[in-house]
Image (cartoon, rainbow, N blue to C red):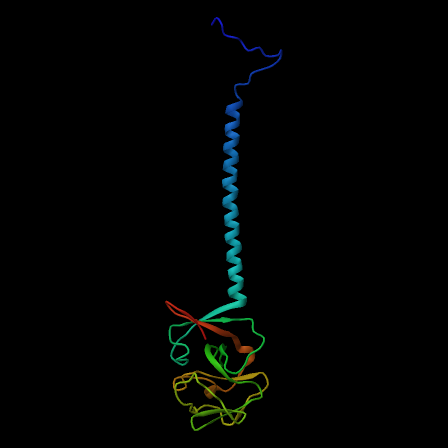
Amino acid sequence: MRGEKKTRYPKGYRIDNDIEPRVKPRRFLRKYDSLKYGWLSDVRKFVWLLLALLIVFRCVIGFSFVKGGSMEPTLTEGDIALYTRINFDYHRGDVISVRIPSGEYYVKRIIAMEGDTVDIKDGKVYVNEELLTEPYIPGETKEHNGIVRYPYTLKDGQIFVMGDNREKSMDSRDFGGVGIRQIKGKIWFRAGKFFIQRI
């Protein structure tokens, strides 16, 4: 049209009308790559999280399901007892998960340690001839018709365990001392459907 000015380009200058179409696919590919690698990154994080949880529950923390009423009222049937596997020192009064001679794991309380002498008289427990104060038991402690004869002295590396509900508990009164190495862990918490409580 008359009056319009034509744009003049230097000699050899070429107008490439394909620039825009070429740019768009590249941008799309970059976006696709970012989504793809972002998804792989999330999967990698999830795998690492699973491995970390596996190591924690395999080597550090464990749990036991309480069966029966041998530890009432401290633990009741159906509770989940949470314990730590890494313990270097145990004491009288600790609640533990321990393997008994039959091969089963029970939740019991440590009453006496290696070298201690345990005696039961008039429904009371004596350790090294001293009356053991036990506010956690609901009744008296009676002897069982097992292999144990009192006073009973523990050998090196042994512990004496009992359940808090002495009338219903099968424990060291039946099978004697158990090895410290049979302890699976020290119990710190009990959990139920709607609560978690420290022991």
